[in-house]
Amino acid sequence: MGIDDFGGGQEQGADILVVTTNDAPGFRVERVIGEVFGLTVRSRHLGSQIGAGLKSMVGGELKGLTKTLVETRNQAMQRLVEQARARGANAVLAMRFDVSEAADVGTEVCAYGSAVVLTRA
Image (cartoon, rainbow, N blue to C red; front, side, top):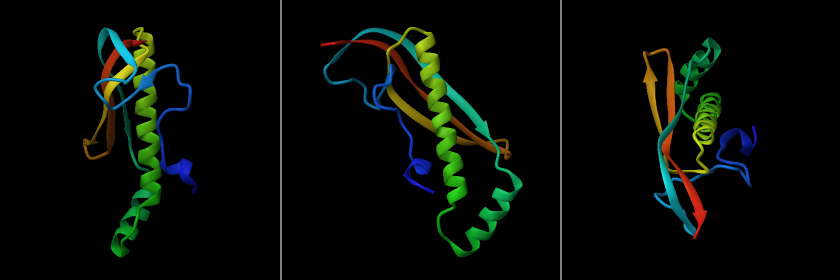
């Protein structure tokens, strides 16, 4: 597994800027559209659960689960960007992830933030 299997974030030159900060240096907020979010719930397949159980006995990283969580976060962020774009935003400020168990059958990942329209300052 390469570095791309364990990372995420936006591609260079994305049309929607997503930052974890409350502002973007060099830009001015022209309009606040409001909260946007992207949500996904994923379950682990049986083979993954068995492998994780065995690995937990000897310790170490659960690479299959790590890869699944990265994919899940990236999907949640993609949905966040799609919602921001659909509402007329060109940026999302204060983006955060929230991760929780969903009824003991999967993992819920929510990417959320404030959709805004930015202009160069």
